[in-house]
Amino acid sequence: MQPSKVYFTDFRVKIGVSQLDKLERLIRTAGIQTIDFDHKMVAIKMHFGEPGNLSFLRPNYAKRVADVVKSLGGVPFLTDCNTLYPGRRKNALEHIESAYENGFTPMSTGCQIIIGDGLKGSDDVEVPVHGGQYIQTAKIGRAIMDADVFISLNHFKGHEQTGFGGALKNIGMGCGSRRGKMEQHSAGKPMVDANVCVGCRQCAKQCGQDAFSYDSGKAVINQEKCVGCGRCIAACRFDAIYSPNDDAVEMLDRKMAEYAKAVVDGRPHFHISLVMDISPYCDCHPENDAPILPDIGMFASFDPVALDQACVDACLRQDPIPGSLLDDNMHREGFVDHHDHFINTTPESEWESCLEHAQAIGLGSRRYELIKI
Image 1: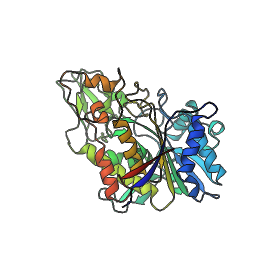
Image 2 (image 1 turned 180 degrees about the vertical axis):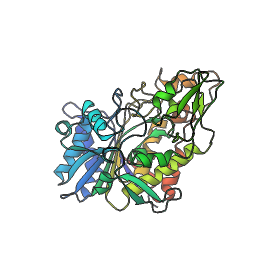
Image 3 (image 1 turned 45 degrees about the vertical axis):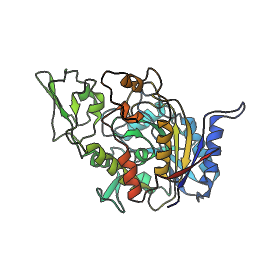
């Protein structure tokens, strides 16, 4: 198999040239115009950011991508699916309000915003996963599957379970309906170490299933209600919540790869990642910690697997930002160096199995040729 082509440009600009101009040049050089967009409906999948979070991609980037699609004859719309957890993106009405609050409107982006899995997160389509080992039919938001062309526009950052959130996570987890997200998360359910729990109740605030109760001030998880999303693990500042299933994160990664394959199979697709504001956790959080690594640049490819591999490789070559969570972890007593910035940030995370499995099922290749423009 030949290496996939991944195109890259940094954030440096000359006077009179904007980063948006560089983004357009990047995606045109990468070949987006080779897709037949003529009168085609084009889903641009991105994350609108949980209100309170400020590390999500600015709507200006979405507008430039949408403008390119329109110039090529396509009819674009921005889309994402509803969340499992509490917050302001768990149904379409609140989700659209959140998108508007964060600057994503038809006026600012030049296209409509459609929540992919409908009003309550139940409007989905069961899509066969060709070559899948864990998922027979992925539950994908109907509007996303109804589109003729699929484009992912991704903010590349850290993630508390999958190590980083890149193209595959934006596609696989992001396009899953609420039951699709439950299916991906169902491999492992966390437990509480009562000896460590301080009863701060931050875990309960993050739980969308009302699975937490308290016994003598200590958290208890109702395993029947829990869907294994893992947000409580990230919310706990005292490491009192853990996964007893050692392969739970690996299973999540593999299922996510299969969901991503279901989304893109059988239709034209193109992928863009902006490696900037590299926060330690997902943009789903209603806050964002300081970046752990310097801004790197913009990447584009027809191959989402190669794209993720190129982005993570670029990140691993960087030095941690002093004073960040990553830097703090590396200076803690007893620190064990995994020689991986994302695992050093959240040691319980894991990312490589997602790319390995994605390549194994034919979604793309981890081998790539990086073309700088």
